[in-house]
Length: 214
Ligand SMILES: Cc1cc2nc3c(=O)[nH]c(=O)nc-3n(C[C@H](O)[C@H](O)[C@H](O)COP(=O)(O)OP(=O)(O)OC[C@H]3O[C@@H](n4cnc5c(N)ncnc54)[C@H](O)[C@@H]3O)c2cc1C
Image (cartoon, rainbow, N blue to C red; front, side, top):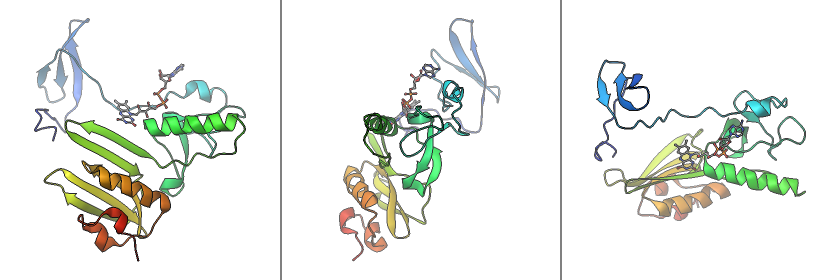
């Protein structure tokens, strides 16, 4: 999709250095010796969460800051939310990891606000994510970290399809490409942990919500 839009993807090669006059970049030198002229360089290299100020309080964590179901760190009175918070995710079999999405950051913030106001709530929102790339709408719900079956629904060639991830006969996650209907229905199936019929699931002419196991 990106290549069709004119993006030049170079794989298996690194950036050796940025070339410029010390003030403005004029190009990029690759590890294979090729020089690519550039007016502007945008660096997308992932993130490392900035956790040092929180760590200095004594809060623990190997990958970010460890928090419990109410976003509490190991230090009384200090909470951690968003990209840097590492917790046992109920939507991934209790595995501990950080989730990097706007949904996660704002839902954790809501949880902490309620906890500070004395409400007995826990953070267990279903993770979801979206991105628009050109005319392509990407939406995901759930976490596809643990599954025993992945089913494609729809047409990959026409860029309108879903990849449904199941575990023990239940939908645990979905990736949708231009398929909002599947996304909306799958969220409900994931949240209700409903048993589904894998044969009906694979038939894109049958709405997802009608794939429930009889
Ligand atoms: C390029 C890119 C694209 C993305 N696209 C999407 C998307 O399409 N959809 C989506 O859901 N998510 C997307 N994300 C992820 C999303 O932006 C993050 O998950 C979200 O912003 C996390 O919120 P946060 O509040 O935890 O952290 P941040 O938004 O990173 O906020 C942390 C803030 O703390 C500040 N800070 C750090 N250290 C200190 C310090 N010592 N003292 C004071 N301030 C400090 C930082 O400057 C920053 O402002 C994207 C991220 C990137 C980088």
